[in-house]
Image 1 (cartoon, rainbow, N blue to C red):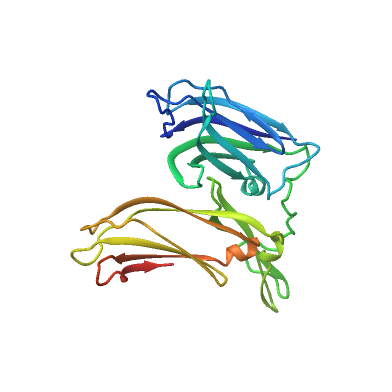
Image 2: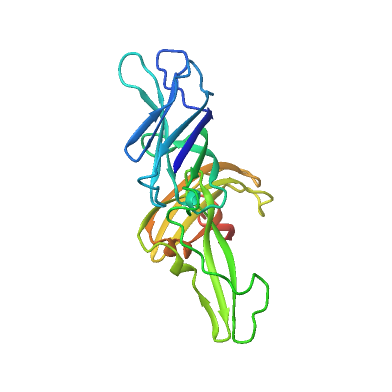
Length: 288
């Protein structure tokens, strides 16, 4: 079994060269105590690497709660190499996916975990042992009927759906939800098939724009709220003055540590408000 990561290229990297010129970026990748490093690309903020790294995981198969730590640094001949961006790659969606390969356009964070304009293009793949199944993926129970089919009298029909969530770091995929119905009534089984171990998640939301807002003399701001159980977390965009078609293009991160089943019960609320001194909470539009 092997886990492979291809570091393709990066764009819009932050220049960390303080004495003029451009940075000399390289990438480090850490997984299961092993660190690998690309070559150094001289004087560029759009480096091309196309370098592949491989980890032998035959003795320690990757788990869904494991991550790969990626850093882009500016090489310095003298002194410390400066961080240009970093990212954490969760393996959950890779291991639970069907193809075994994910192509990622990964946003980079700075040392304070704030978003940067930099993007790192990667491909990660997992090749399990011959005849084996992916680590951390539960064996599916056989279905007696496919989606949309009618079950025999007294039987059970089973539908496999996917609830899509963005867990951050570029990995967007589905958590399987198995819904079974029978003559005795419908029963939700999906949550029972998820991990019962608290897991760290990062939900990434990019607010792009709004169009044809109703009203005049608007100063719109978009407020984003994550509701998870009794916990609420709020973030908002900058105020765009005097516009009915505001362009925000802002990226927000929500970090959560909970059971996967609890995350699936969470929801996001978006509100566009007119920000003025007298009526800062006037809602122009909202949805969940």
